[in-house]
Image (cartoon, rainbow, N blue to C red; front, side, top):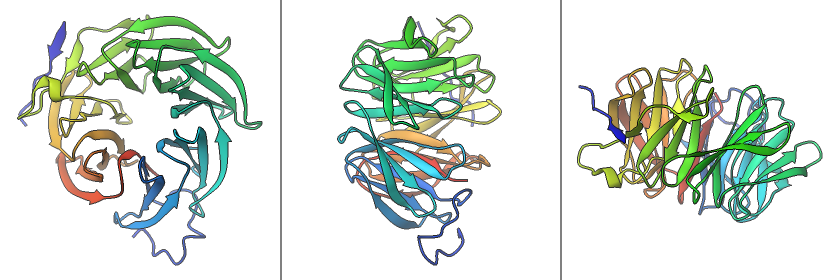
Length: 326
């Protein structure tokens, strides 16, 4: 049974040259553009300062821990490109299995777990040698990947099987399959590690898994922004505040994000953004959220204090993910 969520009342330093930008804490924002085959770079004033050509269909992105390198999964060239944050150039590429979509590092950054959409497998790649050390079979079209902070467990969604696979990283074996809603996509883990949130795009739900038991916790959460029907809502990307008090959920075709109170599971605000809100990230000070809008080819800046959109910025064809070097 679904639980309907109630809506509560409501320069960057001058860039003398791209070469020589400091590696960490630059304040730069990076947006992967799937059909532009590029990563778009914006400064702190949200001006586009560079377009970095990548392999085809860049999607998920993650920094290394020092934020000196940005890794970009490029689905149509079966590779993870590596961008030097100081020079804003692609400096290397890691071969993967077919159609890498989402990936995650182990805490020691020795292994990258990659969901290979067309291979129905979670691939484990040793970063130093660039060799595949295991291919773990999953349901069809795996996407979301999350590795726990202790590195002992990996989770991966299967869009077609409507499951979350629980993987023991020591044995590279699936130890449990959790049935969720239709077309599960992405994860968020609460800071205390007790809850794993799963977005289910086609059933318009968020499922919450109790990580101690691997069981569904309570009823699924559904969202109905003003002027939309439940079937219009296609949640995908999520972000969580450092204290774990709020989760931001991008609602896809419903053109909003939802800000959810994690204590009450109620919506604090629906925020209108661009068309097909796909992914969302928070600045480190949590004053702003950045939403990638896949069908309006822009990103929306949201003020978190007022929970209102500030502006939308055209970036390129089909923005997929946003990360911020702050």
